[in-house]
Image 1 (tube, rainbow over the protein chains, first blue to last red):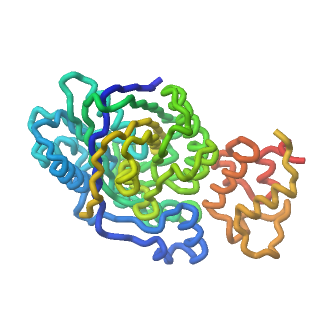
Image 2: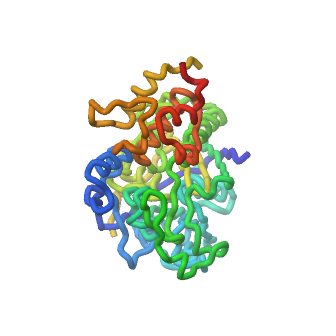
Image 3: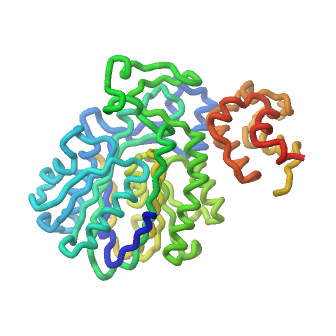
Length: 350
Length: 82
């Protein structure tokens, strides 16, 4: 069972960078009727999203966020011990993008660097890894860069997903410091349901070919290729109802904390209907749940830190916050973090 | 768990589907797929409704087979209704 507890390690700073290009969902009249478009926007809560330029990668948004955060916090770059890059849209298949970022950010060669390939649960998983390394005597500062450009593998002609996703990158500085209280993590996985959110081809199981790149007509007239994202929305909702409240309650029990003492729950920004339902199911107030998906959509692993940066910038000090990421894998993770004095940078655009 | 009255189920279903036409009657024989409002987002509402009222989840493969309101009730389990 992956239940983790850490002491004297915490989040010192968070920043985010999003693309400048705004796509408004109300303009998707080619594949949606006006009525169904209005309903989709109302149900998901997603009004608009930021979409990256063709020549930009997730790492570019993460770089921008990290570069500015390090400058703003006046961090000596030679003091960074580890860089972790969490993404499902790396620069290359090999080498790891984290290593390229080590060089771009001017970090020393003594910095350890590696990628983690996770989506929706990626921020919480990445944070748990950063916290774990920071618990080592020699590790004092870890830079966690988390971002995705999901728009690059979504078919605009697939109604199940064309309105949902946005792009962006974030940077979080994790430090060892006695000012930080206890933090807790619960990490889970279910590979038996891996088909529910998948890009079927382009890896080594089903290599790329002319056939896999050719768009096909699927259920309800949705068009996508095998190298574009497939999502079974109903099955994902079933999964979140079954697993997410259970995991939050498990973590509260592990940390001996009551829900009434939690200040905020920051969910992965998948769909407002889903997360409002989960909140009500746990008999928790919706006032504790900030949302950024109205403006940024579902930014995959970046959605939790992006929500913190955009919605909790002046509200996080001395707050106990639950972070809950769930989705592709299937993979889900919950964290309970004491946000003491966190430097939350103003959101940037690239 | 107390059994749900069929008329209450149909009424809640009509509300969740956000059927605009007030004169549109929803009966056991109504084919959901014929309703303009029935789409993938309606399925999410119905999943929430089933969870709230019956504490169970229906796999998405089940929803693919749903036609009439009666077939939806069969999927949930007729034993849940009075």
